[in-house]
Length: 217
Image: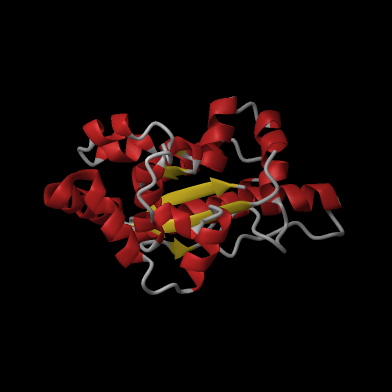
């Protein structure tokens, strides 16, 4: 299991338009120039994403031996569009992503739900959703870097979690009430925190009508 979990918000339609524009200008090679432009200003969120993706300046080269270079250019373009949001376990935070697989299994939810919550849908499906199926076929390594959830997928997943919730108090709007030490065990409190953090992450996408970009590192 990965040590850290990262979550970001982005506009999938605007990202799709940017890709279409680049391909129209000059095919996948144009994506390289757009990736270079995207990194011109490196704010804190971009810096975090680049670190998580283990970015190297060589990504911006045209080395023919770099078989996944187009995937990397696309990721750099995406990085410039990301906004940091609630995750399930960044550095220094409680690793809820390590607790949730057990909690979801105990709630009788299938492994596919666990996978969707932690990793999202394969990134190539983002390209399909934006009418870029041909490009998706040319970028087989894209799914190795992360996953995504559309606002509708986040809403559906949130409802699944609510329906299976071990503590119905999490159905109220944030801030969610947590059990007190006097009437619940520490384990129950930790479980409630993990569950509500997952719902909060999904809520950010739903309320802003943004997609989630998810990375397990």
